[in-house]
Each structure stands twice: as structure tokens, then as C-alpha cells.
Image 1: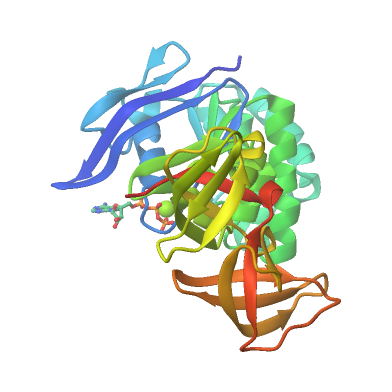
Image 2: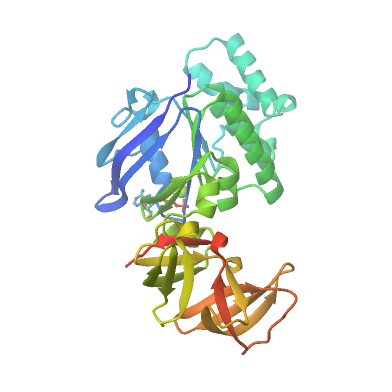
Length: 352
Ligand SMILES: Nc1ncnc2c1ncn2[C@@H]1O[C@H](COP(=O)(O)OP(=O)(O)OP(=O)(O)O)[C@@H](O)[C@H]1O
Ligand SMILES: [Mg+2]
């Protein structure tokens, strides 16, 4: 049975310090959603609330039609996979996996059968009799995964499960987690501070900052259409330029930087452009040209990228990064212009 997880306006405190603020999150049945954000933004706290290790100050948490908000942790039936594996050192691999089944009152024959099936799924059949101390990090992680999956929980939660593994194993394991999660159709909440990991494993990603969700969307949408400056910066839009509309002519809009430089943008591309906005661009969204149009800049350091040259560009309104063609390398100190490449730019709400 797959169920949805819903957090509604959850606020949480440690003592008198607020760490989550009105956090709302809905995960559809069978969906994998990641929480992504810097250290201390409240990812683990969110998991602890759902697991029942911490009570929210206000708001509610539901799993399917069950209200978890004040339910004791041991009644919640959630599979947890943590960074440090937390295997029982005195139990064999098989007994570690079967542990939750024993707690649930299954007989020994059934326990062994289920544990062995799950060990086969994670590729550890040959290790059933081993003790955890005799396993590699990746193998331990797979035992922890098998142990969480074997109880067929309605919800799986992962907290940085791969951060102790080397780079190659991290990639292998995240594919593995995704495969098992899909196969079981288990609703999942996954915590990481690694953008690539979050984007590759998730149906949707919630980007968090200081106890709040800044945007929750599919990875493609976050990457191409961030909703605000915080998310834009997070996904690599290094240039954020404050703009004010100074002229409108049909679909064409003239927008001006605080220093008075202007660019032209089309509402046919961007949709309705508000009077004040932030123009967001990755370096390949700002073309460095010798033309007169665009934002006048003086070029600084040039970096060879293989597909283009990247320039540090000093404008009156700030320093930006733009890309120029390989055919025409320009020297530091050259006067040039930055012209937005519409398909590579976003219009964001003004922060002020
Ligand atoms: N037991 C606690 N008592 C007091 N404050 C805490 C406690 N646990 C966490 N905090 C604080 O709450 C905030 C959120 O912590 P949380 O562990 O949720 O962050 P996180 O996003 O998981 O970070 P990380 O990526 O470092 O694991 C932080 O400012 C942290 O210092
Ligand atoms: Mg954490």
C-alpha cells in the first residue's frame, strides 16, 4: 500500500530557538522527494519530526489517513536509513535485516525467508552470515537499506545515507536506492546537501534555506526556471542583476541597471515582465560582445572553458561573468558589452 506524506504549516523549536518556520510539504504516494540545503537549514529536523523524535510546536503531519503529529515514534512504522548505518554489531547481516520482522512478531522461518529475499535484492546473499565489522562501508550501507526495506514501511526516510562512501560507490548506491524505491513504490523523503545526488535520485526536490522551503519542483524546473534569487544562485545563476523597466513598446521591454545601462527583453520570451525584477543568468546567458548594445563592461580575467572563453566583466553596477566565442579571444582591459541570451536567462521577482 502506498500513501502520501503531508506536512502542514509545521513550525519547530529547539528550546526557544525556532528552526523550522511554517513548513508545508506534500509527497505523493510512491514519490521520492529530497530536501536539499546547506548545513543547519533544518533537513534532519524535518526528518526527526516525521519520525517522531521531535514534536512540532505547531502544524500537523499526516501519513495517508493517519495523523502522526503526536503519535509515539514506535507506532509510526517508518523505515529509516542514516549516514552512520547504525547496524547491530553483535548480530549477523541476516539477523540485522530480520530484526524489525522479529519486533513485528513474525516467526523465524518467515523472517529468514524475507531477510534472504531482501539480501538478494541488495546483492548481499553471500554475506548473510557475516558480522557487520567484516563489511565494507558500501556493504554496510546496503544492509541498512535492506533492513529498512524489509519491513515494507509505508514511508522511507534517508538522512545523508551516502556521505560516508567514496565517489564511485555513492553513484552506484544512489542508482540502487532509486531502483529499490521504485520497485517497492515506497513514498520516500531523502535528505542530502549534494545537489547532483538530489537531482539525480528525486522526483522532486525541495530547496531549503533557514528552516523554510524556497522552492519544491522537479529538478528540470529548478535548474531551468528557479522561482527566486536564492534558488537561482543555488543552481548556478551567478549573475543576478537588479533591473527597472524604463520603456515598454509592445512586447519589447527596455530595462535598465541601477548604473543606467540598458538591455532589451521580449515579453514573447519571458512572459509579462514586471516593472522591477532581477535578471538571472549563468555565464553562458550573458554574451560578451564588442557591439555597442548591452551593458558596458571592462573585461578582467579570461578563462578557457573548451567550448567558450569566460570573462570576468566589470560593469558600473557590479562584476559579472559572461562567455565569449572561441574565435575572438579578448584581452583583459578591453571595453566590451554584455548582451543577455534570452533562452538562458530568467526573470525573477525583485528581492527589495
Ligand atoms: N538537539 C538540538 N538542540 C538545539 N539545536 C539544534 C539541535 N539539533 C539541531 N539544532 C539546530 O537546528 C538547526 C537545524 O539543524 P538540522 O540538524 O536540522 O540541520 P541540517 O539541515 O540537517 O544540517 P546538516 O546538513 O549539517 O546535517 C541548526 O541550526 C542546528 O544547530
Ligand atoms: Mg542533518
